[in-house]
Amino acid sequence: MRNTSNVQFSNKSFSLKSNLNRHLLVHSNEKHFKCSVCNKSFSQKNTLNTHLLVHSNEKHFKCSVCNKSFSWKSHLNRHLLVHGNEKHFKCSVCNMSFSRKSNLNTHLLVHSIEKHFKCSVCNKSFSRKSHLNTHLLVHSNEKHFKCSVCNKSFSRKSHLNTHLLVHSNEKHLKCLVCNKSFSQKSHLKRHLLVHSNEKHFKCAVYNKSFSLKSYLNRHLLGHSNEKHIKCSVCNKLFSWKSNLNTHLLVHSNEKHFKYSICNKSFTQNSHLNTHLLRHND
Image 1 (cartoon, one colour):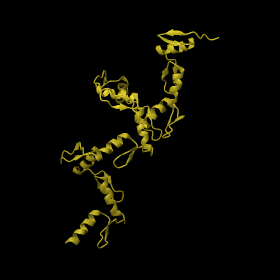
Image 2 (image 1 turned 30 degrees about the vertical axis):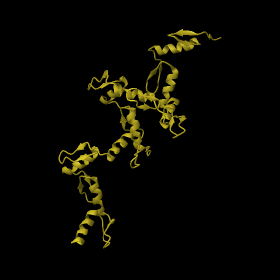
Image 3 (image 1 turned 45 degrees about the vertical axis):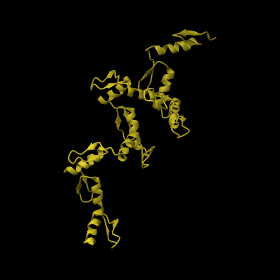
Image 4 (image 1 turned 45 degrees about the horizontal axis):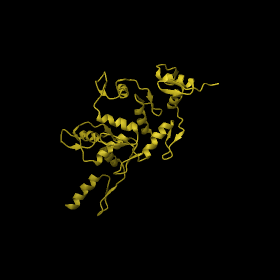
């Protein structure tokens, strides 16, 4: 017969001594339960069982709103906050509200300048040890997270997850200005600069500014004699892909640029413009 008398330790009470013994492992550094996949160790078997779900493709907990599935119920509950407008967690400094406490805690670091954890390689400092540990992977050549589609490897799981979106046709992030959709938040943020008057990338030659660095890089090719883009038909080289696309019309019978007066058609808009000058003379 089980002993149901309360046993106390550190003010926490248990009805069974076995539960107390199991709980005591939390206060111990002993971790006898090892994951057979990644060798991570745990002090309790149920914690190991929960961890094993990370290595499993089984996702039994489905969101009733967007049908996204999760391996853990706690992750589903946290995800459900995304679909709600309720933001109960308010920052005491700037009154900004969040739907998750974890997001608030992360945000609070913005108001803090205390960064006690310093990288021994580049001296960059962090407010959390976990952030330092994640950062240290940058200085390591170890890439344990491999893409199952193209075998590309990554040092961080988050980078792999972001990369996997490349192989997916899902584009959940929509631009509110032009309704263009993106698979990654970083791509949406970069795109939004197109609709902004902010142009931080300046050409040192002409002082012309651009909203995206890629636009500046493409512009800089105009100042260079380098022509890396080759026409597959005649091997002519171009510095810009747009120029190659225009050139390819020469090898095509398609003439999309028509003059409405004489109905003469041209493969390139520039040819049409040249033709218009003859009518204006």
